[in-house]
Image (cartoon, rainbow, N blue to C red; front, side):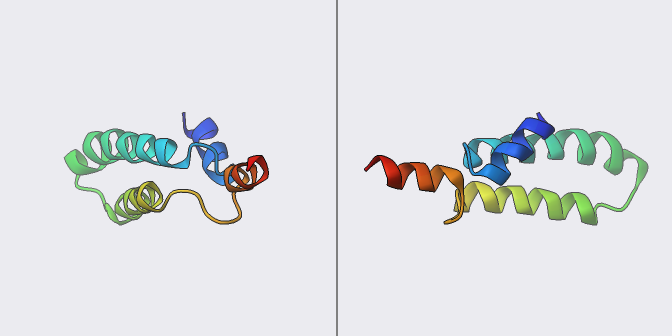
Length: 74
């Protein structure tokens, strides 16, 4: 999921869906299962989670392939 999702986010394909998947996966696997029980630093995980949530809200950027395909089909 991380490889395909990251590639799709970089290309701008289904950005909001993949950003939500990344936020949920990052929150569950890294933060709750690894860092929190062992008392580790959570700054990086929080930053990744905040970035994924921001991508979820913002969506595709003006340079993404999805935006270019939308403009070429109209």
